[in-house]
Structures are given as C-alpha cells and as structure tokens.
Figure 1 (cartoon, one colour):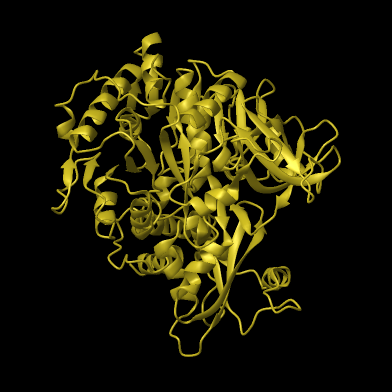
Figure 2 (cartoon, rainbow over the protein chains, first blue to last red):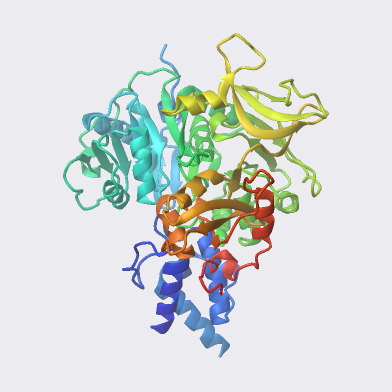
Length: 84
Length: 541
C-alpha cells in the first residue's frame, strides 16, 4: 500500500497539478480526458525508474501497465521481485 | 444546383459503396451508409432541440464512431461545429462555449456535466449526450442516444451556401484569450479536395487519424478521407500517449495514409520502434505543425518503405494547408526547412520590410490568399482586420490576404524556406502557443507582479514552456499554486513544465523585458529530474 501511496502522491502533485482529484483511487483510470497526456506519461516513467530503481523499457509503456495507480504499483513490485 | 457542402461527403461516398467502412475503431465500425443514416438522425435531433442553420454547436467528445456521427449531424443541420479539446479543463470549455455563442453541446456525459458546472453562460440551451450517462441537472433541453431512434435516417440536409460557417477552431491568442478561426465549407472543402487529389487518396486507403478534432490536422483525416471514400482509423485517445501501442497499431491496422506532427512521428520512431515494424501498407506519410528537426527527419525518411512518399504541409489554422513540398532528404543541421510552394488553390508570397515582393534570395513575411483562407476571427473585428489585410498585390479591390507572421526566405526556385516567427508564438507538440496567453493567466494571480514565459527547445516535443515570475512578498502564491492555476484554465500543452520565482528580470536599456537574456538564464537552470516535472518545489529539490 506504501507503493500505491507514493505513486498516487506523485501523480496527483506533479502530473495532475493538484487538481481536484483528492478522491483519486488506486483503481481509477489515469487515462481519461484531461488526465495523463504523452508528456505526463514520459515523466511518470522516468520518475518510476529513478524512484524505485527499476527499468521501465519503452515496450512496457502501454495503457494496460499505466492505466491505474494499482497497475503501476503491481509492475514495480514485479520488477523489484525479479531483481531481488 | 445544390452547392457542395461538407455534410454531403458521407452521402457521396455511400452512393458509390454504402457498405464500405467510413470509420473503424477496433470493434466499432461505421459504414458510409450507416454514417449517412446516423448523422441524419443526429441532425434531426439537433433540429428538434432548437438548433437552426448558422448556429454553432460545441463538440465535446473523444474520438469514436458516435463523435463522427455528431460531427456530420451538426453540419447537416446547417450548423458549424466547435470542437473542444476533451483534455482541456472545464473552465476552458465554458469560456469557448460562451465566446462562440454555442446554443447546443454534443458530447460525452461526464464532460458535458463538468461543462455545465463551469458556467457556460445563458446562451447554451441544449445538450445531446453520446453515451448513456446519468441525467443532467435541469435547465437544458437534453437529447440522449435513445432519442435518436425517433428520427429519420434519410432526411434532407438543410440548404446552405459554401460560404456558411462550417467550423470554429480555437487557437491560442496573444492577448490572453483564445481566438476562434472561422472556416467556411468552401475553406475546408477546397483544402480537402485538393489534398485528396494531390496525395491520390483512394477508397481502399486506411487513413489514420492522430489529431483530435480541435486540431486542424483532423480536417484532412475526416474530410479528405471521406471525399475519397476511404476508411478513417482514429487512434483512440486512451492510446495516444503510448508510442509503442500506437506504432503497433499503425502496422497491425495497415495504415496507408498517416498525417501527424513531427513530435508524434519522433515519438513513434524513438519510443515506438516504428522502423522495426512492418510498414508495408504505408504509402503516404505527411507531417505539419512544426519544423521537423533534421536529424530526426533523416531517421524518419530511412524508416519509411521505399514506395512511400513523404510530404511537409505548411499552413496556420487560418489558411488550412497553403504550401507543401515532397520531402526526399533531410536538410543539413542549421539549414532552414523548406515549406515548398503554394498549393494550386492558394497564393503565397513574401513581402520584405518595404512591402515589396521578396525575390529569390530575399526574405520577408509570408502572406497567403485564396480559397482556403479563413473568413476571420469569430466576434473579433479588430483582430481580423490586423490579420486579414487588403491584398497587397491587388490594391483597391475587395480581396484580402492573411499575414502569417512567419518569416521566410525565397529559394532560387521560388519555394519558401521557413526562418521563424515575427512574434512570441511558439509550437509545442505542433500546437500553437502564444506566450502572452500563458503569461496572462499567471499575471491574473494577485500575488504575481510580473510573469514571463519562454520556450526552451526540446528534442521530443519541439519546445518546453518555462515560466518565470516575480512575486509580491506575502502574496500567498508559489510555484505549485501557479502551475495549478495554469492547469485549471489552459490546455495541458500550454501549462509550463516549470515555474521559477525570480527576484527580477533582465531588462533592455529601455527597461523592457529582455526575452533573449531571460531565455538564456532559464536555459542555464539545472535540468530538473524526471523530465521537467519536479521543478517548482520550493526547496529546489
């Protein structure tokens, strides 16, 4: 859950500019109108690589992996597990 | 004889082959015959809700077959469509609805609901929802998908003329408010029919649609595509930020005609591995909206199939495409990009500072006249008069020419080389941004004494916007709150990636903001982590 919280905070603050998404839930889509655009996705991927020390190669940057906070957290967990 | 109007395009294609696909998006499919029927119903519902010819109707929906039904329904009801960017904040939608005087909005339920909560003004009287959304608050006449069934699938179009308004496309305005570019049926058709012929579009083409409806590149996809009776394949909005997914779709759906910004092409190449995919179906690759950086252009040309042709199309929204050139090699680094010569339906010429037509080797501002040039800016005679001037080469007549604000050099063969802008307009991912409009939003905060926005070159997006502000002490604003204010009022591509607080700005000897020095100062700021998003933290981390 800690992972979800960190991702949610980053997305809300840095990508959604603190817009009124206080109710952003871990299973809410981040890909609806006005949410993540192409630049935001690039930033998110770079942040995840650095923050969690995992690779996030271009071919994995697909809607199914980025759709929600939970999917992102699951991906990070899988990668961390694979590395450890 | 009935004039040729945009709303007739699906019917003309259906007369040739009603079962040919018009719009294909995964499992969603509209044949031209079905598009005629559904757009007829939509026109009927619009009329029943009070829309009359010459009205403006806002279109607030992501790509999809129903959105295309609505697009043609609006046109066939005799109205003009006003495409709103679904990704923009509701406050921006409301501003454009008020400015355009739209009587009706057609869109997705959630977006329409947010619009209604953001003060769209008393002129908005009706809404049509394209999905099965919960009921809207009272006060409007509302149509739903279930209502469409009651309307005739073959009702005649409203009569109109070629000079009627067909589309109102809003672009960034330098004085702080967006401006509505008025395009007539003739403007759009003149472009679409030329383009369909020039690039040899055919019914068996699969025309990818990258641009959203509010971006003028989309008029090629839908209207030139329909003129040829081709199938339009929209890239779903949800997939657009994912180059690997879009590149895979390009190959899988065998897109044969693709029109996109250089920013989009570069993303597909560098992050979507476009060059490694099977592009055997691609025969026409088009780009527009910004300069293609030479090194990337060289990679792009190398990635295209040998049989494919590549073209650079040039033209502000106000003129549609007005010059074009076939691209067979990338310019050398530092060599200006060719925008080619005038399309056959246009006239383009450069005037030097003394008002004379620039000869080969000379430089000047590019002017455009002809069938594709807009009618003017909506409700803004002053701005129209500044941009649509009496034709400099036909004095005393009634003809006008559009001042592009772009500076060009005339090549020895008479074609034009793009040198830059006369003003503070920049391109971000192909979108036009007037820096003054962003500065206006920042300056609206009471704590901001002065705001300046500069564009720093960015290898993938063309430009990155960086704002610098001088704040009153104790005003309560900070980098974060200002970025939030921008995001609440501006489209995402206009929100500065960084907002930096400064004690003062560099000045010229006359005390004016020295933009050149400010740009150098901001470019020298240490690059923020995570591609530009993390700056703006008060602690500078």
